[in-house]
Length: 254
Image 1 (cartoon, rainbow, N blue to C red):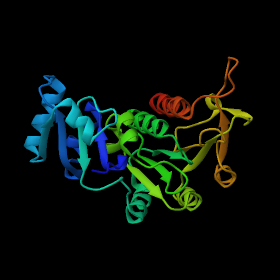
Image 2 (cartoon, rainbow, N blue to C red; image 1 turned 90 degrees about the vertical axis):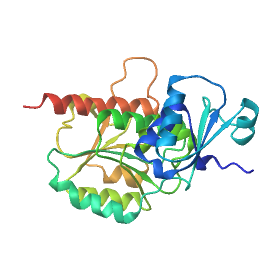
Image 3 (cartoon, rainbow, N blue to C red; image 1 turned 180 degrees about the vertical axis):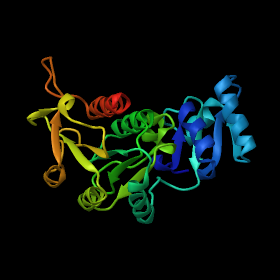
């Protein structure tokens, strides 16, 4: 059996959220046999309740089918990597101005490490963002590693994969969304930036940061003040810092 990582979700938290939020995407659930664990029992019960095929295997058999880190459980997906349609994106854009509160969006410009994308999705879920936007090309998609690191957030966060990120940014601006990008050399700091309105935080890729065209689309460029010897943060850590500064400002606004 040939295993494609994008066809699987593993890890207890990620599997539990998948079965709660998106059970129709699960083809079958693999469980490690004779392992008594309350959370694995919860997976077992959810799979049965959703009428999803449940296969219990011993450790060697499970490793033979799925050799990645799994915590005793893995789900084979009925379809491969999640990739929302462009039609869904257009509908989302049309709804932006009608939201009760100003939207908070996260744009990830070419994240290539699945661990970073998973961590960004988890932070996005915790911060209550309205959507995450990622490019289709030259970036990692939502694979098994992303889902495991996201601990379920890959199935709870509204995620759009766009074929042309520059055009998507223009469309956001046309809907009244301000684009706030990050740049280590920006003259303005995070804590001086007003993030209370309709805002999309735009994060660059590991290493090179924002691409030139993406940077030119941004209305504001900001940096995170650094007090130590290290000049920058990992992109997933920086994303968390920006998102929760936006959350803080919005909660404290008059």
